[in-house]
Image (cartoon, rainbow, N blue to C red; front, side, top):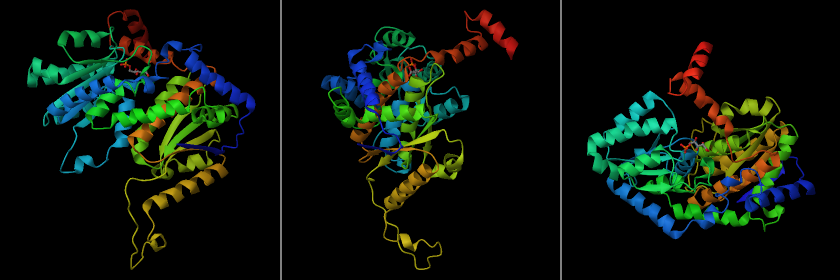
Length: 440
Ligand code: PA5
């Protein structure tokens, strides 16, 4: 992976380099804020072969039984698997006559009645399995979805067979999902206590659904492992890409930038953006501080957001994930009539045009006052994506410490839940319920 910050206009001072190195050390020494949640730091190198094998075996059982696996979870218990799955999947696989892997679809990441209805209706035409993921085991959205999926599987297959089609990923001891899994006899994987949701993609939270979908989870972990080594405390600042990225985005914030837009020219990476938004938004957006993480998919969004990025408020900078090599080759052909005037592109690969778009946009945005950070991955494969995920996680830990927040808590996500429970008359919320209804 490469990182280019030459178009940010930022020169990182020796002082900031030292601070970033110190922040990285805090992640290892455990002397910083949120030190109960640092299990992700050494996660790639500590995953054992036996753990990977157990995940692969559970995945193989589900794959043998189901051609549709409903993966239930929200936030950190959803976005990692979704992001990697989108990145690793042919977007047109469902149009192919032959399906080589079960289709993994997601539920419990919203409370839309139409979404769950349509999913359950479609599921009737398939042999179905389910993975239910919740660290706390008490999150409302996935709990509602799982109640419906469980009932449907039991009605269709009987209780015993349903229990063989369901795998749970949850806390080792606490929470309603743990109790339910024990009572029902579901195979269960544990989310380590010291790994928060948004840092959990390399635990069974991400690895199990990905293995079910046929993703090479060993390559994913291998890529993350390499990045763990490349961003360790023994790596000096100038060679530590996560530290550089963390430092430069903090300098841009200090210089008045308020929004970081993550973008790429590959639509498969769209959900990497969504995963990254949670990682950075939930880690840094506190104490009324933090860059707002936004995203675009290019070139599509140049035709919607391009105007704003070029000429709107000058509080933005961009981070582009650039992919050095596509997996396939498509060449633009010459056309006799040339009515579209595109013969100047004849003989060129589509990726060359995409690359020139990227370079042209970069310079246009830089000229328009939008600094540009460029992250280059060699290609979209499991190893590169594993490296990219860990790169962002490590940078997020360093960046949060540089910003002066605890990057590993999320106190603000509770506020909406209290209101929702009060509005739904949950027992125990009687007073809050009266108060909130009076405000409607
Ligand atoms: O990052 C987080 O901690 C959150 O996004 C959680 O992952 C999300 O709220 C889901 O929580 P749980 O896994 O407990 O159901």
